Length: 68
Image (cartoon, rainbow, N blue to C red):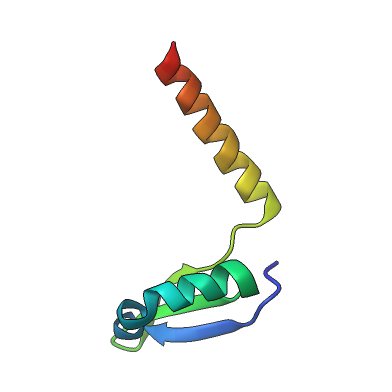
């Protein structure tokens, strides 16, 4: 579970403040619910440890396949 709070923002806010929002996800662990026309459709959040390890393993396997 993320250590930060959950914040709802619009697509326009995401576009206008993407670097700051990514910084907040990375360093503060915040989660953002993205809305369009008032309806939530996406979530931007930090990966948990299990998700990070699966992603790293997948990338490593893909790299190995490329070098064979």
